[in-house]
Amino acid sequence: MMHTAVGWHIEMEFMEDDQHTRAAALVRLPDGSEVRAHGRASRHDVDANQPRVGEEIAGARALNELAMHLLTKAHEEIDQASGRTSHPIHV
Image 1 (cartoon, one colour):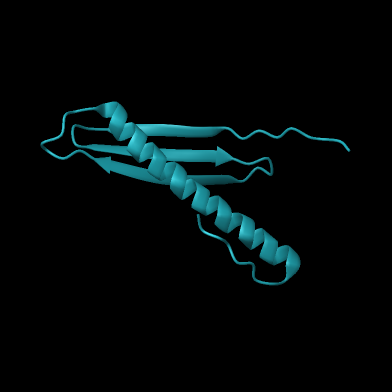
Image 2 (cartoon, one colour; image 1 turned 180 degrees about the horizontal axis):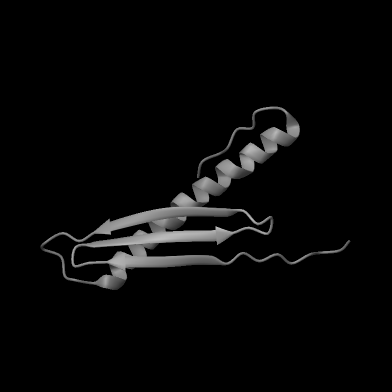
């Protein structure tokens, strides 16, 4: 049996100010399609200014949304190919 290695590269960009961090995630799939998602984090006034923490939270939220978009895309493709409705399991 032949195995093929496939890799995906995810790009993540952050935009920050003193109170907010926004993350934009993008994955390009081997079929040429792209899936995009966004995440946000807000710093409360009493919290220390820790940009890395804001990036981690906003980035995690963007990746979570990206995962949900990928699951939806996969189930739509299953439905098209099979002619029936698949039922995604949300994690």
